[in-house]
Length: 81
Image 1 (cartoon, rainbow, N blue to C red):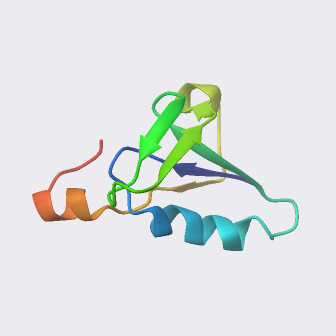
Image 2: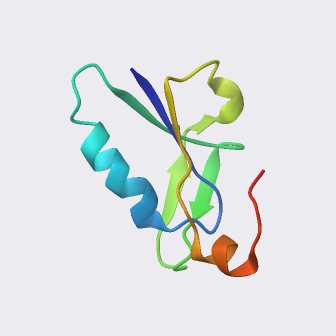
Image 3: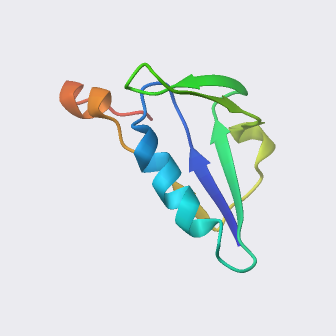
Protein backbone atom coordinates (compact mmCIF):
# COMPACT_ATOMS: atom_id res chain seq x y z
CA UNK A 1 0.00 0.00 0.00
CA UNK A 2 1.45 3.35 -1.06
CA UNK A 3 0.89 6.12 1.51
CA UNK A 4 1.80 9.76 0.89
CA UNK A 5 2.16 12.27 3.71
CA UNK A 6 2.01 15.70 2.06
CA UNK A 7 4.23 18.31 3.75
CA UNK A 8 4.18 22.09 3.46
CA UNK A 9 5.75 25.01 5.31
CA UNK A 10 4.02 25.66 8.60
CA UNK A 11 2.75 22.13 9.30
CA UNK A 12 2.32 20.86 12.83
CA UNK A 13 5.07 18.25 12.84
CA UNK A 14 3.23 15.83 15.15
CA UNK A 15 0.40 15.64 12.60
CA UNK A 16 2.91 14.24 10.08
CA UNK A 17 5.22 12.20 12.30
CA UNK A 18 2.46 10.59 14.40
CA UNK A 19 0.72 8.90 11.46
CA UNK A 20 4.09 7.98 9.95
CA UNK A 21 5.17 6.14 13.11
CA UNK A 22 2.00 4.03 13.05
CA UNK A 23 1.71 3.43 9.31
CA UNK A 24 5.35 2.53 8.67
CA UNK A 25 4.85 -0.61 10.76
CA UNK A 26 1.97 -1.92 8.66
CA UNK A 27 2.84 -4.92 6.50
CA UNK A 28 3.40 -3.96 2.85
CA UNK A 29 3.12 -0.22 3.59
CA UNK A 30 5.34 2.21 1.68
CA UNK A 31 5.21 5.64 3.33
CA UNK A 32 6.57 8.72 1.55
CA UNK A 33 6.97 12.29 2.74
CA UNK A 34 6.12 14.46 -0.27
CA UNK A 35 5.90 18.21 -0.86
CA UNK A 36 5.21 20.54 -3.76
CA UNK A 37 8.94 20.41 -4.46
CA UNK A 38 11.94 18.72 -2.86
CA UNK A 39 13.94 20.47 -0.17
CA UNK A 40 13.42 21.94 3.26
CA UNK A 41 10.02 22.18 4.94
CA UNK A 42 9.69 24.23 8.13
CA UNK A 43 7.35 23.29 10.97
CA UNK A 44 4.98 25.80 12.58
CA UNK A 45 7.13 25.69 15.73
CA UNK A 46 10.09 27.17 13.88
CA UNK A 47 12.31 24.59 15.59
CA UNK A 48 12.14 21.55 13.30
CA UNK A 49 12.82 21.28 9.58
CA UNK A 50 12.48 18.26 7.31
CA UNK A 51 14.36 17.64 4.08
CA UNK A 52 11.77 16.28 1.63
CA UNK A 53 13.19 13.90 -0.98
CA UNK A 54 10.08 13.56 -3.19
CA UNK A 55 7.98 16.16 -4.97
CA UNK A 56 4.31 15.59 -5.66
CA UNK A 57 5.24 15.28 -9.34
CA UNK A 58 7.37 12.22 -8.48
CA UNK A 59 4.27 10.37 -7.30
CA UNK A 60 2.00 8.96 -9.99
CA UNK A 61 -0.57 7.47 -7.60
CA UNK A 62 -1.25 6.60 -3.97
CA UNK A 63 -3.64 4.47 -2.01
CA UNK A 64 -3.75 6.92 0.90
CA UNK A 65 -3.04 10.67 1.06
CA UNK A 66 -2.51 12.31 4.45
CA UNK A 67 -2.45 16.09 4.76
CA UNK A 68 -1.21 17.11 8.23
CA UNK A 69 -2.77 20.06 10.01
CA UNK A 70 -1.28 23.41 10.92
CA UNK A 71 -2.04 25.95 13.60
CA UNK A 72 -0.91 28.66 11.19
CA UNK A 73 -3.47 27.66 8.56
CA UNK A 74 -6.21 26.98 11.10
CA UNK A 75 -5.82 30.34 12.83
CA UNK A 76 -5.71 32.22 9.51
CA UNK A 77 -8.62 30.26 8.02
CA UNK A 78 -6.48 29.46 4.97
CA UNK A 79 -6.47 26.43 2.70
CA UNK A 80 -3.38 24.78 1.26
CA UNK A 81 -4.97 23.99 -2.10
